[in-house]
Image (cartoon, rainbow, N blue to C red; front, side):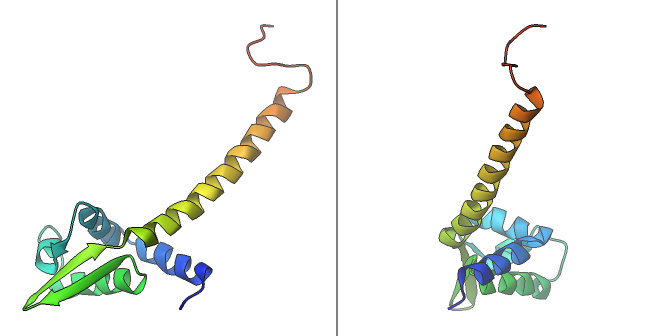
Length: 115
């Protein structure tokens, strides 16, 4: 099992490609076959499969084959891990920006005061 940092690295690396983000956006709406996922894209089916393999390796997508049809679905827990990491970063930076705003306002200055 990968540690948490390695797992996040894989997720963000996988989402760093616009085609893979488009595949994720489509799968968020519900499961789809590889053919359905490839239909709107201007690339070969083999290229789409390679993108899906990257998403599967990162744990973002899971697929299963029934007969000749491979159906893909999103793994929301993995995306939530990335979302939580981003949320912690946002909280940290919002706090820093608030402190900077207070510092720049200077002592004795309050919001809403008129000069």
